[in-house]
Amino acid sequence: MPHPAPAGDPVSVPGTGVPPGGDPGPGAAALCGLTADALPDGLVIADASGTVCCFNAAAVRITGIKAADALGKHLSDALPLEDIDGRRWWVCTDPFGGLGIRTRQPERNLLLAGREVLVTASYVRENGANTPVTHVVVGLRCTSARRRSERNHAELVATVAHELRSPLTSVKGFTATLLRKWERFTDEQKRLMLETVDADADRVTRLITELLDISRIDSGRLQLHRQVVDLREAVDRHVRAMVTAGHPADRFVVRAEPGLPQTWMDRDKLDQILGNLLENAVRHGAGTVTIEMTRIRLGADASDDPATGEAGEAGAGDEDGEEGTEITVSDEGPGIPDELLGRVFTRFWRGNRRGGTGLGLYIVKGLVEAHSGTIDVGRAASGGARFRFRLPAGMPDVLT
Image 1: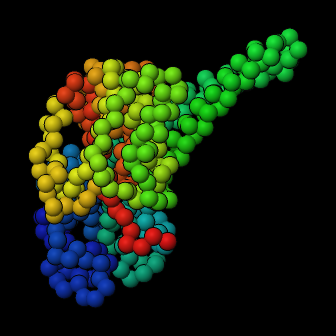
Image 2: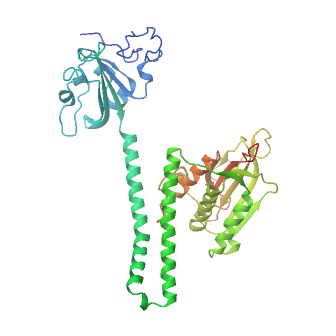
Image 3: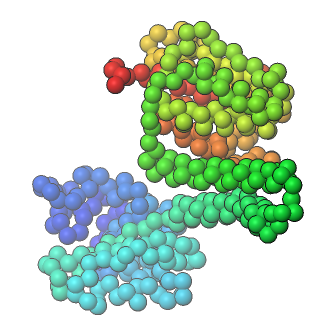
């Protein structure tokens, strides 16, 4: 039986002909002097006799099997993998037999002592096809990250289906009623029904826009159409829209320092950021909603106490940082508990409230960061929630 190499020793990649510690030569796929323990995925290598000669630290973490218990054993005994039907995987795949042209096994979800593991394997034939397998290289990955991703997608689908059902049911009901009984309704009743249909159609449109934004943010394909924007004008415009929608004008207070820098950013994305933050403050906060705008130097000490929302003192006085604007939106409501602050910008976070998709603040964070800005949440001096985002001026040298 070959003597197994210790799990942490330098390991050559089978098939390159490079001995451990040897010179890989140009183009060889060696580990560049690193040990197998440096790999982020589990690595298990068996020699021509099927004896495990490498079992790295990631494999130990993923399988829960000690390296000392695996090294020197046959591959099928060191990794007793089974498929979901309980069949022994190594018996089914027969890595050292079967077709002589096989080079790998695609990734499979297998069971190891009841634990799910993602497994892929390569069959190394140093002398080419139809020659004996000299090494079997097994890659192992934990399924937890993939399961979380699958749960997120499932939750997204369920949320979208739920949010779409209500407005579409309303649209279908009102339009069907109008088509069947048009003559029975007065003009005022028809107008009310059509206004409801219009509002529900806007709700569906907003949801679809949110889904598209999430897809673009997550995939890094968010496109920005930058132009010079006046942040004070944008804030005033959103406050006027809130007042027009029926909110009392004295509920909003805007404080802006003179001489705020103009900002080079996407106007529509800015409207989404401000709209979400103001709507969140009005709907879930209480009392006066205060919007403050200050000129800052980015790169200065932006630390603050999340319990009070008080910023560090080095903000505006640091002349070495990039020029930018800080905007805070705060209310006088109950605020957000300290233990939940870290979850505010995650998907589907709704706090203790019902309704909504829980996607708005996640999108806000993505849009701010797409403009090289930062956003955080804390408690305002009044006790309510305080959202603060910072945007660099970022003006181009030449406007075209």
